[in-house]
Image (tube, rainbow, N blue to C red; front, side):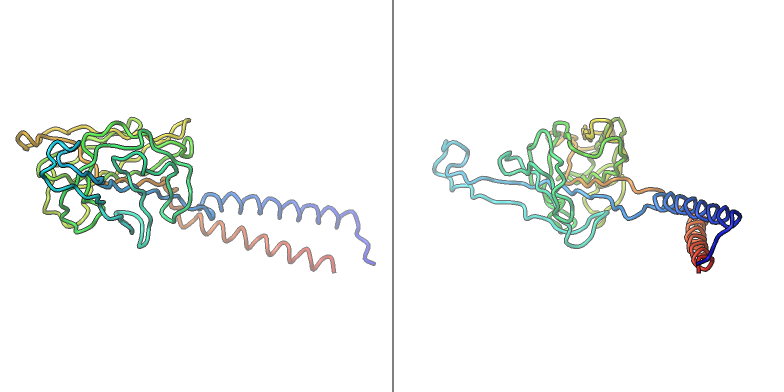
Length: 272
C-alpha cells in the first residue's frame, strides 16, 4: 500500500481544486455557447371560415338564393421566413369555438400559450405566393394578447401582411416596439422584409405576454371605399437566439475540457 506524505496530499488537493475550477469554467462556457436548448417556434395562420348558411344573406332573408356552403382556407404546413418543411400552424378563425385554447409549437407540442381575444374578423384574399398561408387576413384586429410565454424573455416576431388592395401600409406595435411596412405590392412572389412582413423583437415582460396591435400606416394611395387598413395574414414568434460566441470562446471551451482530461489522467497515474 502506498503511503502519501503531506506534500503529496497537498498537491492532490490542489489538482482536485483545479479540476473543479476547470469544470466550472467549462459549464459556464457551455451555457454561453447556447448549451443544448432550442427556441420554441409558434406559428399562427389566419384562416377564413365560412359556416354553412341555408339562407343567403344570413337569417333566411332571401331564401331564393342558394345556400352558402361551409368552407375553410386549407391549413398551411411548412416554413415561412423561419421554420422548415412540415411545421405545424395554429389556425386563427373568426369562429371562437374552433380556435385553439392551447397553442402548439411547430413540432406539434403543447405550449400552454393562449390568445385573448381568441377570434377576430377574417376575410379571404388572393395570394401572389400560391400558398394558403397568405390567402386569408384579419382586418383592423383588436389587440392580440399571447399569454403564457416565458417571462422577461426576448422574442422575434414575424408579422405577415398582404391584403387584397395594393398601396396599403401597416404599423404594428408589440409591447412598445413598433414597425411600419412600405406600401403593399401584390406582385411580390417572395417574402420581403418591411414590404409583406415585419420583424419585431420585443420582451415578454414580467407577465409573459406579447401584446400585438396594428393600425393603418401613413402614405396609403388606396382610394375609398377600400381605404387603408392593417391586414395581418400570419404571425410567427420564437425566443430570440443568443448571440453567436466568438471563435475564441469555442477555443477556450475546448482548452478547458482538455485541461480537465489531462489533470484527471495525471491524478490517476499518481494514485497507481
